[in-house]
Length: 117
Length: 107
Image 1 (cartoon, rainbow over the protein chains, first blue to last red):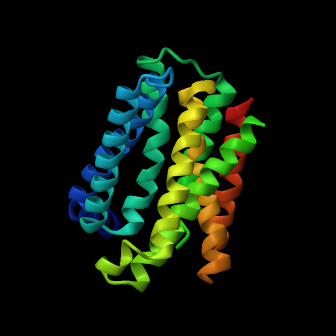
Image 2: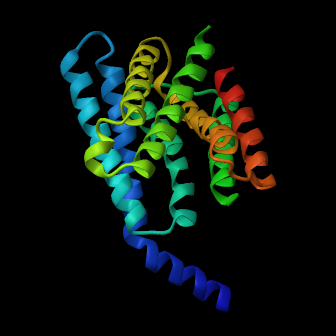
């Protein structure tokens, strides 16, 4: 009972930071998407990518001011999730089941590394 | 060769982060911008970004972006070697799982 209460309190406390991290992760993946689209020498896309990436970095800094490391750092694994969704929906890229398992493993690895402090 | 570049890209990113960390620790904001650590950090960051853009031209986006997580491994190594931080067993198991994930993605 108390564990659930502590967990809920933790989410409440870090809510702002969590939302900021999610936005940051989205920006990073969108920035990479712009770079992918601009890869055939479309400088405009590359510049937009840098800009969005920069915004993502700012949001990450803001996130760390609004939440504790132990809650926010595992959220870095969201990059893997968003990149899969964006790759699938926007770029029509497909991953084999083994690849998808690899993505899940990377996400788990990031969570474990974040939790190891 | 491709994955050597991925390793280099993530390594440069981790080195840049470490340099920025060192720069912010040592200097006031004004001196920071001109400190060798900051300038080197920008250099490594730029090289990493260029490698990143190049790799996106020859690799699948949904494969490359998760691989960027390799930089956490380099950050761990740098933290241990240069900042004398302790690495817990949990972090090491995370490292191994991450490497397995990267290998599985590249198949």
